[in-house]
Length: 575
Ligand SMILES: Nc1ncnc2c1ncn2[C@@H]1O[C@H](COP(=O)(O)OP(=O)(O)OP(=O)(O)O)[C@@H](O)[C@H]1O
Ligand SMILES: [Mg+2]
Image (cartoon, rainbow, N blue to C red):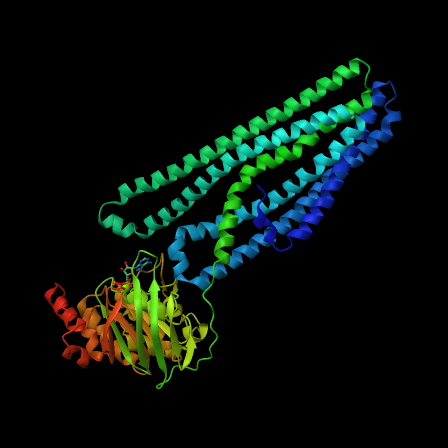
C-alpha cells in the first residue's frame, strides 16, 4: 500500500526524518497532556483543592498549546514541501509536453492533458501533503503510546496490541476496493475531459449536421458516468469510515470495561486506568486519520503516477549538430527512413531520397498515402522508427534537433491564429520586425485589403473569441510570418490550400511561388497543378515512396505519377 514512487521525490528523505522527529515529539506531548490532566483529575477526585492542582492544570495547558503549536508548524512545513514539489512537477510536465510536441497531446488527448496539468497537479499536491505525514504519524505515535500502556498495565497493552492488526487488515481490504473504484473513476474523468473538449472543438460540425443536441446528451451521459463512479467511490469511503469508527469505538469500549471492572475489584488504581482510557482514542486516531485521508488521496496518487510516467517517457534523443543557415549547396539526405503509428496501423515503409539546396520538392499522393506523416518526420514532430538523415553532410538520427528546427517555417493546412492583434500574429516569429517590414510582408502576401477593411487596421484583435478570419486570410498571415523571417530557409507546407476554393488558391499560388525562391521547399499536396512548378517530386502510395524524379521524368514514365494524374482527372475535382 505504500507508494514507492513517493520516495523518488527530491527532498523526501530529509522530510521523512523531520516528520519522524516531529511525530516522536508529538507523541510525548500527547502523553504529557494526558498525564498532567489525569493527575489533576485524580487529585480533585481524591478531594484536593483546585489550587493544589493548579500546577498540573497549568502544565496541561502548556502541553496542549505546545501540541497544537507543533501541528501548526508541521502543516506549514508540509505545505511548503507539497507546493514546491507540485510546482516542480507541473513545470516538468509542461516542458515535456512542449518537448514531445503534438505527438503526446494527440495520444493523451487535449482535455486530459489540460486537466492533468491543472487539477491533476493540485490533487498531487494534496496527496504529498497528506500521505507522508499520515504514514509517519501512524507508524510512530501508536508505538510510543502502546509502550506506555504496557508499562502502566500489561493487560490493556495486550488488548490494544491485538486489536490494532485487525483494524489494519480491515483497512487493507477496504483500501483495495477503494483503489479499484478510484482507478475506474480516474479513467472516467480522463474520458470526460477529452470528450468535452472534442465536442467543443467539433461544435461547428455538429451544429451543421443538426447533431449538437444529440451530442450534448452524450456529454451528459459521460458526465453521469463520472458522477456515478464518484458516488461509488464515496460510498466505499463512507462505509469504511463508518466501519473503522465503529471498530475503534468498540475497542475503546472493551478497554474501558476491563479497566472499570478491575477498578471496582480494587485490582487497579485510578491514575493508570484514567491515563490509559484518555490515551486510547489517541492510540487509534492516526490509523483513523490515515484511512479517512486514504480515499481523499487516491486521486492524487493516480495523477501523481500518470504525471511521473509522462515525465519519464523517453524523449527524442537530442542530436547536437551545428548547422549554418541553409544554403544553395546544402544537402538533405534521407536513407531508409521508416515510421509506424503502432503495430497494426499504417506508417511509412523505409524510404530514401536526397534533396539539394533550394529545390522545391512536391510530395504528392492520395489521401492517406502518408504525406503528413513524411512532413511530420521531416519537421521533427514524429520520431522515425529507423533510418538515417544527413543534414549538410552531418548525420542525425532525428530531425527534432533545435538547430534544424530553427531553419524551418511550417505552414499547415489551417495555420493557427493566436489571440492577439493582427500585427502580433504576423510578427509572431519575429517580434522585433519594424513597421516597414510588416507593411512589406502585408503587401507581398496580399493582405492590404483586409488591413484597410479592419476597423483598427493592423492593431485589430484576431484569433479565438475575436474577429474571425477566412481560411485564405489565415494562410496569408502564415505566409507573411514566413516572409518576415529571412533566416528560415526551409519551408514546409502541408496542404496549405486544401480547403480554399480554386480561385483563392491560384491567387495565393502567385504570391507563394516568389516567396519560395531561395528556399528549400517541401510541399505536400494532392493538387497536381503545383507539380509543374516543383523541381523534384516524391510520389507516395499507401505509405511507400513509389516514384521520385522531376516532373518531366515522371510524366514520361507510365508509373505511379501518371496513374495519379489519370485518377485525379477522372475524379470530380478539376485540379
Ligand atoms: N496519429 C495516427 N495514428 C495512427 N495512424 C495514423 C495517424 N495519423 C495518420 N495515420 C495513418 O497513417 C496513414 C498516412 O496518413 P497521413 O495523414 O500521413 O496521410 P496523408 O497523405 O497526409 O493524407 P491526407 O491527404 O488525407 O492528409 C493513414 O493510413 C492514416 O490512417
Ligand atoms: Mg495530410
